Length: 116
Image (cartoon, rainbow, N blue to C red):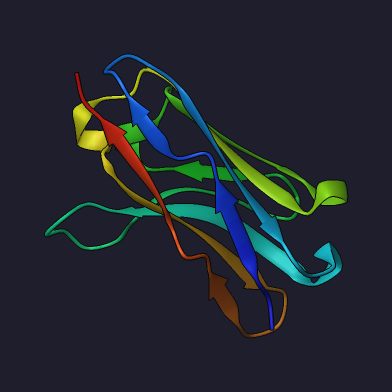
């Protein structure tokens, strides 16, 4: 079993910044891909950004150039730095980790609201 603890959500004005973090309760040697997804009201959950164990990253087109994903294996944590936030970024953000073997786990989510 893997537990994910997310933090860093909140309310921010358009153009502002927020940083999310997700800490894993398991040794990182079994973790492959780590990522962030989001789900806005009435919409399906969508990929925001993922990072592989080797450091390769992939971003949704809508966040490229504004969001940065990173991971610190020593701290068992994946981060999402979000800059120039827009109202359409408002959603619940979920952390997801995929194991090297079969299996993946979701965090409980953290709310991000962008509003003036």
